[in-house]
Length: 309
Image 1 (tube, helix red, strand yellow):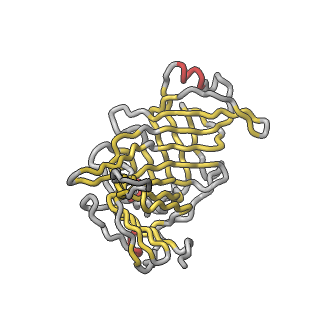
Image 2 (spheres, helix red, strand yellow; image 1 turned 60 degrees about the vertical axis):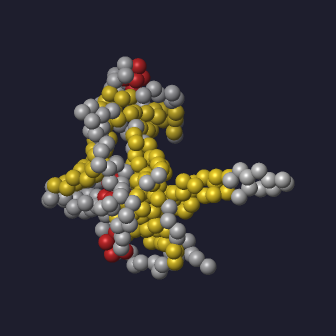
Image 3 (cartoon, helix red, strand yellow; image 1 turned 90 degrees about the horizontal axis):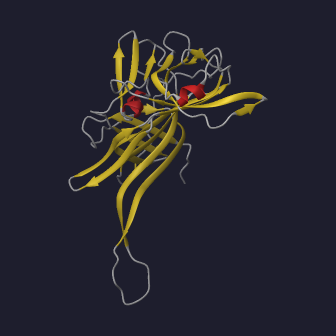
């Protein structure tokens, strides 16, 4: 009998793509929430043998890979210029990490030289290894809830083995702050502060599995970020999302969570195209707008930054 709650997740950036980076419990443990594991995704190729009788065909497993999805609390490291323990997760989603010692840590999307990670998922004595992993991330902040980053990774398939669970060190993960008026002091669209119920930005990575002669790989071939948020309606003289969408206009979006030094996470989107608002909704008899926006690159790889200060 194996117990689902006895899980240990380890993630480490690879030096060589697809070569196990050998993550350890002491240095590479991840504090994950709502883990979902698919250990043997792929296809079943029929042999299509012509037989002189009825019956099922034998099949050959093909294009095998593994999927792992989970959430991580969005919280800075607690000190200026210190990378958070969840940094390798974003890096394996086509994101660069820049550390300014004693000042800040900045994340931004990249299109080349994307890193990969080795993931070890231990479940009560069984180890699943996902080498060459890359994935997608979503930033999700709901009022009066815990802010999350939601990850989904694909990794190259390997046979699971019996290995004792490592002892994880999770002290690098700082307890999160609830999303609230006090803890989330800034949310603006086109310079207008909006009362917000929920915010989500999907990085929109196109993660492809490419299995060929002499090469098995998981690659990110494109991305298209989207922002969805639900805000209280304001006078159109203050902000008119319908006019902005009709004119194909862009707006600056800024979201700050955390106020103390070492705890601030600020998402900056300098050019987000405002999309059509197809519905008007209400909650507690208050009119709300579901706003959709698309971060647009200008010089390239600059459609958003996440800055920890």
